[in-house]
Length: 311
Length: 243
Image (cartoon, rainbow over the protein chains, first blue to last red):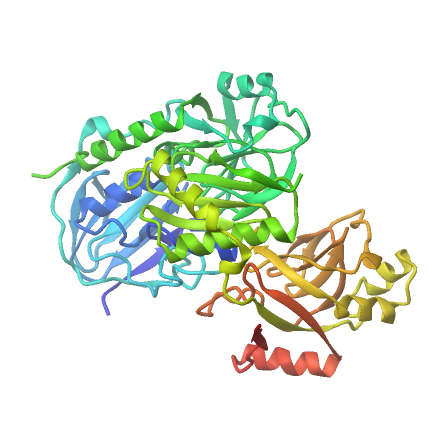
């Protein structure tokens, strides 16, 4: 079976596809890429379907050897890519041959990079998805992050070509992002000062952030009647505020339900930007209505469909 | 108090909304949540991608490019009118073997002293009740249950443990909980089940589902070891009855 070999894994490199659907009611989160946009573009660059499995690399990239000819694309966090020591472009497809070794350096900006390979990673799906859920030891490669010596099976190589993401679509992860938020479901549990604080910002990313949630630090978000609620479902991007008044944005590997107030939720099209903010870096929130969010989503999907320039 | 006259539709970002049906925790409002979810699945409602029930609300994930807010809430409102417990299929009763031996139920003795009961009597009372699963959540396979005898009401631990073994059957307040994965915990551990509440290798990885009934079956240490071995080898079939 065609494969690629992991020579060095990096601190947390996992197999992800678009995520698991339908398991939240059993307490199992969707998982999937933290930055869906960078992930999708990597797949599209190498001619894969959007839901093909690729690698998510965290802060430090892996070193990988290929066993056959493929197209490869690296997107997301700014990890300098070299093939057999030669610099390779990011946000663009390039060809590799059997025996070639791809290395990703530590990220200069951003947190998560994606490596897509034509044909996709062909680990066995678990509950309909190849996404790795680390805490639940589910999916991906043996339900865990990659280690040195792992051999990742690949699907039959199909498409690919020297396509590139348009320059203006490549994000600058050193900039302070403003992400859009819809208020609810428990915004009525916060004072007007509390809501104003969230949107006045900025909030700083802390070290206690992972695939489950991003813990932020900034102006206190004031409750009116305490922070406990009757436990309910936790949406993707939900902004949970506990007793200390500090927000936690709940992400791909989040708990399915929880008992703390959620003042709002980050819109799907901006969640990837949250996931590229490094500890110590800051971000801001901007309030939008549901109707506005849906208009932004429409425009965003169109923009994404036009992001790649095919030769 | 209780069930709202009309459902509340609460935004949860651009891809989800919460349908809240009442303002407290009881079987009646939870049955309506589960009935609403069942009707959505059976219809099925175009554009709805996933649902997550909890005590008194249903989180509905949707694709706004397939169905807008107004159309979705109108459809949910229609289904809500029919969302009565009678529409649900018969509930399952899952039998969960539980060993109350001191090395597994390592807080049974202390808990019994705290509420002034002999440990044997506490275990017997705990195992005698009919429990109902409101929903499964927080961690994979973790049931939120009701039905514990009031006599067993106990304050939570002053100092939460950092690790609780999976399968630990435990109580706190008027709640009974079975830890599904190793996790921190503030409940008193009375016993342990050899069954896996979460099994990532299983076709259905959560043993329990929202709406299930649970009966504990007291087993001794030898039975615990035998069942644990059978579970590890994949040759144990849990006893599940459909009412």
